[in-house]
Image 1: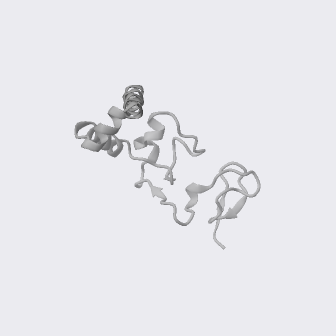
Image 2: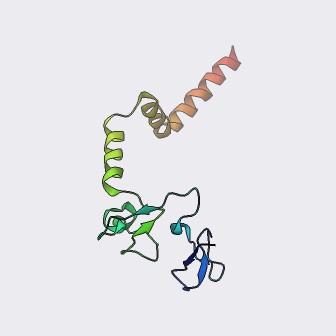
Image 3: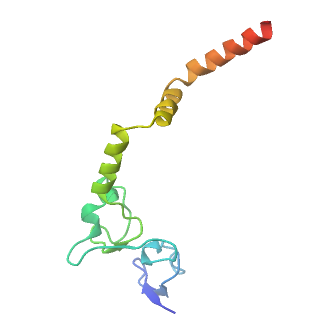
Amino acid sequence: MNTATCPRCYQKVNSQAITCPYCRTELKAYGHPGVTLHRAALGSYLCDSCTYHADDTCNFPQRPHAKECTLYQNLVERNLELQQLRRSPSLSTKWKNWLRQNQALVLLLVLLLVCLLVSL
């Protein structure tokens, strides 16, 4: 059995555990199967380039000195993705956004159409 140390209570736990059996701290950042474990390059920290650290929503106990994390999201890559989405939204995306913004108008038009069909 591979073991790891809980970052909160410092007890030895199974490295495959999702939560610490002693204090119930989430241990996802210790490499649970099926979850990608991001690792920092030698001499750096993941938090320096993480979206969650930048917007102050990270609650990882190792922050801001995390060397491994499963929740890591690269700030630069995320910003590039958002820019691409803003620049070239597809027709279906434009349509969905218009429907979301004009729900009341669409509902009123549907209601009028139903009334017209019933009156015929």
